[in-house]
Length: 116
Image (cartoon, one colour):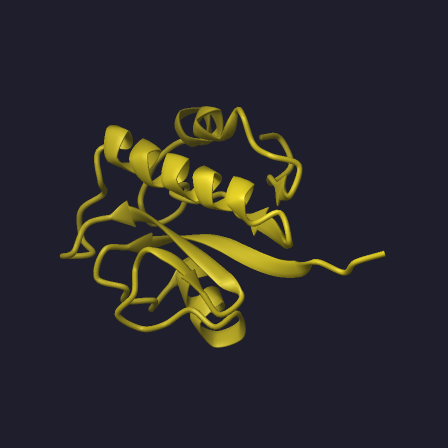
């Protein structure tokens, strides 16, 4: 049996300022890189939900783009095990019913929060 590396998938901002919420958790405990707000770093994967100013949420269509980019990456990296938190549903202010459908077609190595 092959053990898979667990990757913490969190909501970020385009500036990569990981100062609060799941972004802070990713920075402190999962290898997220300060200044890198998109993609795989350490044992984390950043999906932006806020803009470079960190004060404004992205449009849902922009979040969808980054989610699709993540899902393509996850499909290509079957050796990794991705654990998604409820991205965008805290500081970014999205509702779960807005974000959860963006993850409707996930590969087997992506694990979603309860209720998604």
